[in-house]
Image (tube, rainbow, N blue to C red):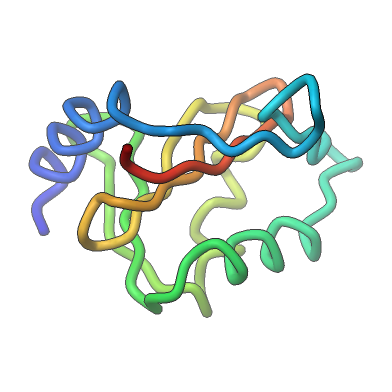
Length: 110
């Protein structure tokens, strides 16, 4: 899928997501920034949340892209802690939102 289409689909779907609470008070989970990033925990969370191998990473109109669960750690490494972005399944039904302050949340369409 084209970068612009990934970004546009993500932008139109993100307001329809039902976010899953990880604690009684919040749906956000801290994964760390800079040298503190818990990459193994991130990869496990992505693997557990998404059933499909193909994923879409959406963050700008011109730089959004398709990747796989196997390559996700390498492909998002330069985004973690620097860019807000979303990872979607190919149906745009399941999502993870990453924040540049080192937090993430998981959700699915309502």
